[in-house]
Length: 598
Image (cartoon, rainbow, N blue to C red; front, side, top):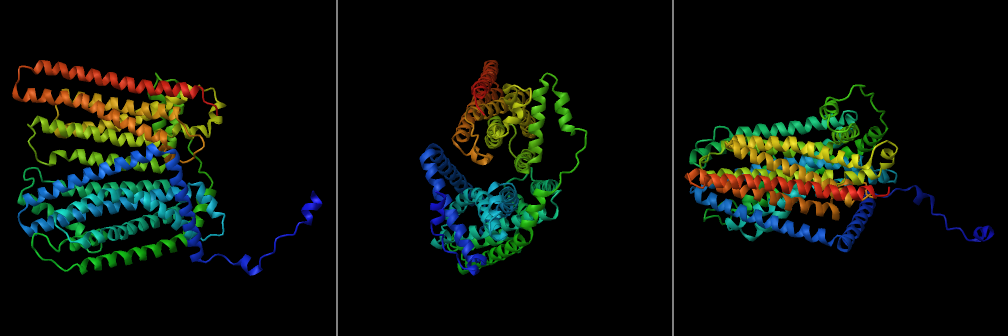
């Protein structure tokens, strides 16, 4: 056999100049686009074969959400048209809405693109594989940047497109307005995405050992900026809401968003110029102005692209080497104060479970992707709840206050369900990759699962109840309603944590290393659906009796005592439903986890 193999003719040797010659940038671009096309086709085939339910659910919910936003924005623009009769004031108000909306999204795109690109470039196995190939580092950065831009901007497209279409229909915009929507939005999205990518590359390259702290300071700076801007906009607006004086004062405070160097102003001006051909018979500049803003956005997007590629060529490979070869810093012997609080503040919990909670807590703190998103969303909710009373309304109208309070409760629950599905559900699957370490310790499997549940429930109860407390205090809710809201919030936290942990143990994916892909699978989709159904059920069970109780209290009905009894029964039903939804998934998960083979 050996002689037969040696007798086979050897393949021809390629010329030396072809071996030493690297691919041109155009050749690399062709290879990477071919790779992306093949990955997309393969992923689409897998979804059509194995994830039809998830794909159908995503498409249905996306269409439902888009239509709902479209109706909401249509009603809003019609309300503005009825409330503001003066054409100039109406145009200035719409311009201000566009400027603030796109400026806020620009800041969010910078932050989200930097976070997503950091994971894709420095924490993914795919980047490690690509760096071993004869490929320019800037091409790898561009390849991952395109993915980060897609993931960070789909929400912007989903939120912005219904508003823009609704305004175009309301303003009777000409046909070229709808043609220019997509090019203007794509050119705008590229600018903050490239800026966030440059910041990510520079921060990791310059301060590899302080990358987490720098990222945290940057996130807190963004949050402080948003809070300062919102506070400046909303102060002293309690007594003259939706009056001419209120509009004039608000427009004066929004002048910061009209700076001519902001890409958000270029986008809003280009869109409004395209829509201003027929707006109530008032003539504006010709539509060629919108093409000028499109050219301005496109040219700046290309400049940002060139700058990002230059920075990537200089910083990516050294930054990757530094972040993966740096020696670990000597950690203090004393425990972190939060770890000590968990270890000493939960005496009724077994020590093994407390140690597992501390382990998960440390992993959460060391992952900037998790705590940064957690901080951003809950900071924005806290900002909104703390400024509810700054919008003047009749606080004696019980139905209005009750509706707002329970809508706030539902929003908190929905955001919490996204976090439990995205971060809590994959925890068991990710633990399976390292379960042999826990298997060497004298720890029962039930303790592992209960540790996940207590970590999720404890991390959810504190911020969620605090947010609901802020909302109720600003709305002036009575003590009984406050207790009902806190009970509902507690049941939401326990039930959502039980669903995520229990189903995560029942349907784990031990082969997948990416938590986002685990959450996007069938189990994660099912968890999100069950969580949404549970939120709707609990909120309705408590909201409807509260509504009738407050109406009876307002009119002084003799059925007030019976309504109070109905309210207490509803609280008991919500408590029972929360206990059942928490217990059943955990029981199913414990049974499957005990029988699981690693």
